[in-house]
Amino acid sequence: MNIRKFLQNVIKEGRTALTEKESKQLLHEYGVPVVRETVAGNAGEAVLQAGDMGFPVVLKGLGATLLHKTEQGLVHLNITDADAVKTAVSSIEKRAGDKLEGILVQPYLQGKREFSAGLFRDRQFGPVIMFGIGGILAEALSDISFRLAPLTEKDAGEMLDEIRAQKLLGKFRGEEAVDRGRLIRTLMGLSEIGTDFPEIAEIDINPLLVTPDGAACAVDALVIAGGNDKKRKFRPPVDPKWIGSLFYPESIAFVGASARIGKWGNMLLCNTVSNGFKGRIFPVNPRGGTIAGKKVYTSVAEIPGHVDLGVVTVPASKVMDLIPEFRDKGIRNMLLITSGFGETGKTGKQKEKELAKRAEESGILVLGPNTMGITNPHNDLCCISSAVSPRPGSTAIVSQSGNMGVQLLAFAEAQGIGIRAFCGSGNEAMITIEDYLDGFEVDELTRTVMLYIESVKNGRRFFEGACRVGRKKPIVLLKGGQSRAGKRAASSHTGAMTSDTKIFN
Image (cartoon, rainbow, N blue to C red):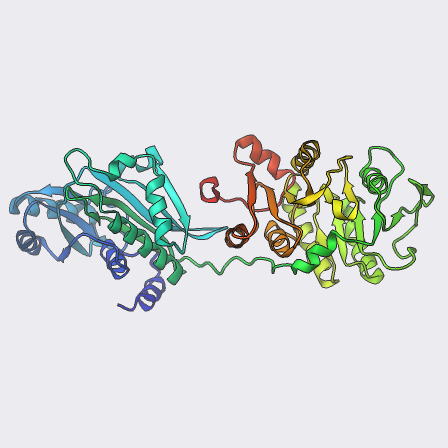
């Protein structure tokens, strides 16, 4: 069976789903145990096939557009004789009409336990495999475990162990324990299909029936075509060395510096100065003057010499104008504190995309917008709004919530926990959580990574990066934005797309 060619033909025909027979043929090719079945063209053939198969049997209507057969009255169970076969076929023909392409004949398998298994494609994480309780109680109980494909056999085994209804996997009411090998083979087959065929959007096996001898078998299956993992484009990774340079500036321009206490342009400048930063500091404000004992320059162009980092607190409407000024001055790093971008809605998201595009074209890397700032105790750099000064150490912190990040820093300071570096990632227009993971992976001073996240830009990359980094350095992950209130709070300071919490967890 040339599966790819077959799927291409299905899509060309304008079909969105495979028939139940076709679905099981595909699953069988990948080692998934499926029920034995035949296709009859009429009542006479159905009677003969049922007799050869042995009563009792199950009859189902078969057709490319007959997807929800139970609801349409096209499934007849526990048929015990030829007359009942004829009656069932007549009912199916009447209900299905011109949509009927045949009668599916299956043995009536008995068993007290029903599970479900499947594949779907998450917008963030790609192919996801699920396993859980099946039958009519599947939606009500929602006892399900998930893993990202590709699976290992260890992953598949853990999925079985994670459901709450563990007793159903052992000996149960006179029936043998479930053959775990068959279940694992089913999940591995789904995983292989998911990675081999992006054309497949979804697979649903329900029920995955367990017979009294413990054998699991797919008695119903649906495959939905039309998936495509390549539709969504993600930003390319940022060079880890470039990220590292953000935390080691030798000169900083504070664009939007203010003499007014309580303004961001004042707090960031004053905290940086008071914390003992030894590099050069250039406040910028069209009014000029002096702030925190530093001369204020009226423009970026007026600053003498090279500038490594520009800290921006001007209104969102003026940020775009700074891109050419930074480019002409040779400032390659922008710490964009300013809010009013992706977190504000559709217009703000478009503005944020345009900002990232212009910055990239000008060779400028933007951290933010809508960020709380950065800290590097190893460089006496404390460019955040709060006067928190943890000692130098080996724990790197990245937080999508600036307020939560500051709380973590305050806790570290109180407990004497040394900090390698901190940043509030903000809306992540150009630098994402995944990029920070790459950066701290290669940083020799980082021994532990702590993340507070509410969502991710590229779920698959995050998963792979966290697995890779976690083998070298412990990762402590706090996941916010899971409650309704948390989701509302998250929307105010992150522009990342969210996935189902169960998938993320």
